[in-house]
Image (cartoon, rainbow, N blue to C red; front, top):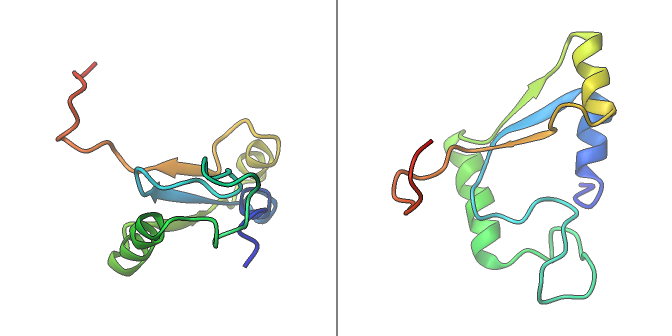
Length: 96
């Protein structure tokens, strides 16, 4: 699976990820403790567990864009390829 290039591949295919788990390193991002990305192997065990749980529970889904204009917005980075899940209600930040 092309973890390092997942964003580009999703955009090319006209797809986006919905409800990406909070506090999970995004594909292609470098873990602060390593000097370069090692693909999915660079994720910590908690990050991997977050992804596994989201996939098993069906929270993390893939949406295919069928409209040509929507696909072009993905390819040109005008629309996000990954949309994160809503923040937890337990966060200390105020609303608004």
